[in-house]
Length: 103
Image 1 (cartoon, one colour):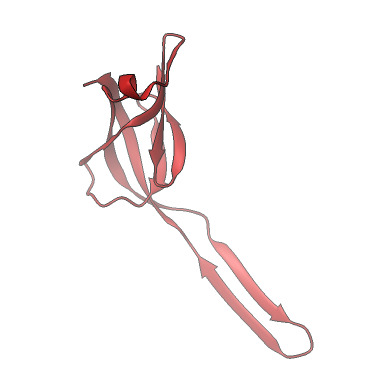
Image 2 (image 1 turned 135 degrees about the vertical axis):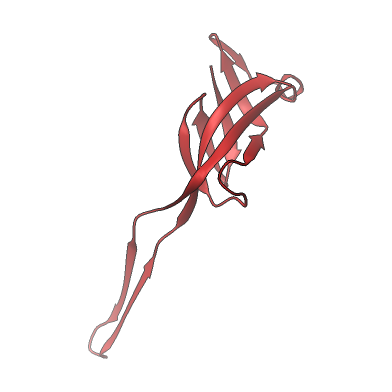
């Protein structure tokens, strides 16, 4: 059984005991996050009707925070002596999916 949920602006395929890195969510380690699924596949049966999906809920537990890879940005203009170096490192929240069930 798995579900497709919208988490942090992206759609993620989740099943029980998956650990995901999603965009930063307010909450401490051990707190619970819930999502409404966009699609549920259960025993080969695809559920995509919004009336049926409203009865499902995906719950996840916040494990902690994580950081993505460092992205280096270099701006350079030829013959002018202009160079600028920037960097960025995205922060994520790690969550472990604890259940996909009907309400």
